[in-house]
Length: 562
Image 1 (cartoon, rainbow, N blue to C red):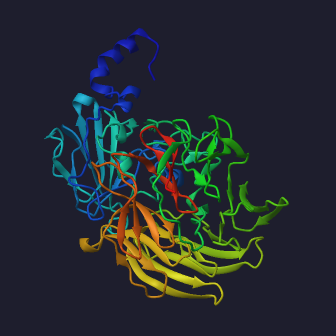
Image 2 (image 1 turned 45 degrees about the horizontal axis):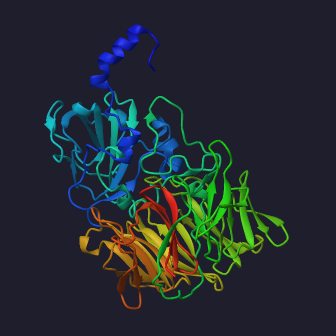
Image 3 (image 1 turned 120 degrees about the vertical axis):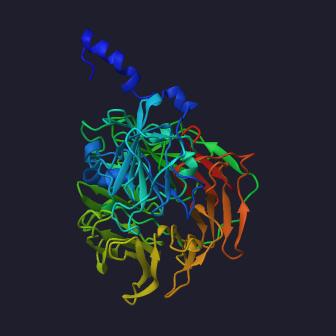
């Protein structure tokens, strides 16, 4: 703090040129001057590197900040990039080596810092695989190789990544690297960081800290900033599985493809669809007040209040509502208001495709990456919580509905980033292995009807097998690698939309047809430019419209493809 004395003011002025960081003003964020480059050479992709976790109010920080980032107000005080071990790490700007292996930062097994004198900033590079031979004071140019990426678990198969920070010269304040690094952050966020890198919504400040730029500075001497009483998504140990739609075939794409802006700038992330595909629902409200759910027609108009209590989830037919209050899950039948408590241990349940059953995954403790996953329970029941069945006890992992009679189980193998995929059949109460092992599995998504699953597997030992895979949900299935790579969402039972990862190019929406193996261009960047922020987009229940958060002005928009 600046003391209100003449002496302190004089000392402050004399120190500005050596201690104060180079400012990034609001105007600069709108027309940014970003003096730094990326810490890797070449393009991102499944064999090279991917964005893993953003800076600030991230999902990872909300779940694990008290374990990993307690010194930094429980927020993620850097940017994480996934990369295979021993990927060359580049200096993001000109400077001089300041510290090597200062373990007060953590960032094992090795770390390094560079002082950027002209900018009065310091960059920090963590989880390097080998100790650097560079010396304090040694001059460095932007793009010089200053180390090699590693894994904090020392395995190179658990969590290989680079942790990059931008701090002031005293190391006491962390700044948002996205405000200084010159790249297309929206494109980078399309794939790679689904698990930890998105931003958490505080339901008492629904639009705060929701984009890559407006994250707060982090003071290493201050209190936590993310102790949210009500949030979405909820803590990872309580989250519901994604909903699986029943099998269907979408109508052919129309030719009158219109984009409509639905909300003001800054509002509203994490929107979702009404069952009839005609309106969007989202949280909104002023800071300091409990957010409310609103609904707006996708052709535009004024938002209308939909429901007052924000922490809820509707069934796909709007006939039931799940709520979590004070750790107790309940289900409300909307036709008569009947409320029934559910014994889920605080976990959110998910409706089966035809809304006949519930599925939940009970975690007794946090599944901390790099640690030993706790034994977790997978349960199913009728809609009122009766006829409960314990499907399986497994070590963490993920669970999904496939159809009314089958559940997909993704279970990690020991302390690795490898998973086993199995199918549990409710009617026979039996399990069968679908895929015995896949390394670095991410982005698992079930097709409507549950016949197919998409996932991607980057950084394989053989680079030729890294990429997106399509697999049929049958025992001992063969996973087929697709000749595309980017963010994807299922359209119907036999097709999906995707945004190719192409750093330096404009975003483009395409559609992939499973039966033909061909892609169709859906949006032309020259005619309909889009920029999806935070990989925040979803497909309507009928498959022919898309909600997305536009990165150019942070508005919620609807793309009608009918």
